[in-house]
Image (cartoon, rainbow, N blue to C red):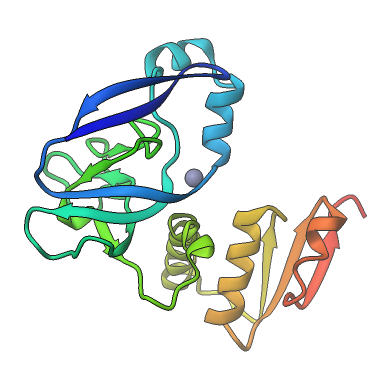
Length: 213
Ligand SMILES: [Zn+2]
């Protein structure tokens, strides 16, 4: 199957290339993508020149959902909406791929999701329930990052959890504060940030602070 991949060749310059997609695993057509700060740093050229030389050309974006086009195993129907998992385990350590040196990450170690079609192994694809908002679902990868942090915190923290502070008023701070509010309903969630217009959006938080105050 013919595929077009949109790769960042150098800062602020993309190139299109025609590629072949093999019909094995799950083939997904990305529909909703979210831009990470990590993508911005490649696009703006704010990473060191040797890193840019080593990684580019590369398709950006690791936060995305899409529509299944084909599944060789038949577990997914065409038209199913799915989240694509950017982390891909290689080698032995398949139990904690997030922490394994042999894992590769899309949009960092190899091509991300800016292509017409993406080929993924079955276990790198998760079906999205029918009633999910697809614009919000584009953030599921980012939500999983916040959720992972909170799960580890829950396992390890032995201090009281009646007051929880979140530093940061960007989207990761917003998602983390919102998850904390759901997962620790009895705790107060305090948000510390720099931007009043962002902080105003944290209407569910118990207290907000501007750090320069
Ligand atoms: Zn990210």
